Length: 67
Image (cartoon, rainbow, N blue to C red; front, side):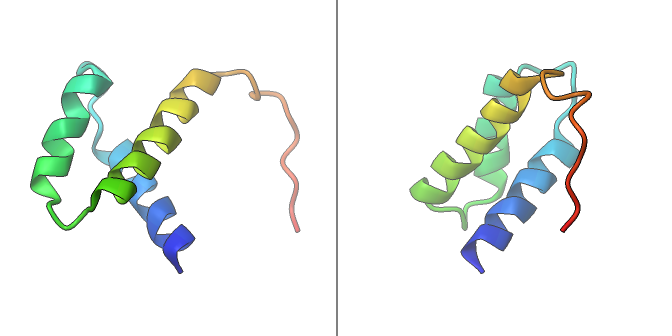
């Protein structure tokens, strides 16, 4: 259940993130608006979002697996 909530938070951050704003400026404001997130929730969200953008288009042509 916790992983599902973390994924939903990740998706919410990506949905609300305006591309013209630096990520380091956007995230503190997002966390201020969502005070229910604890420090471990913020840490996991930071890691997911930053790693998503670090990957960039590295896996662009990789076929997606369906279970």
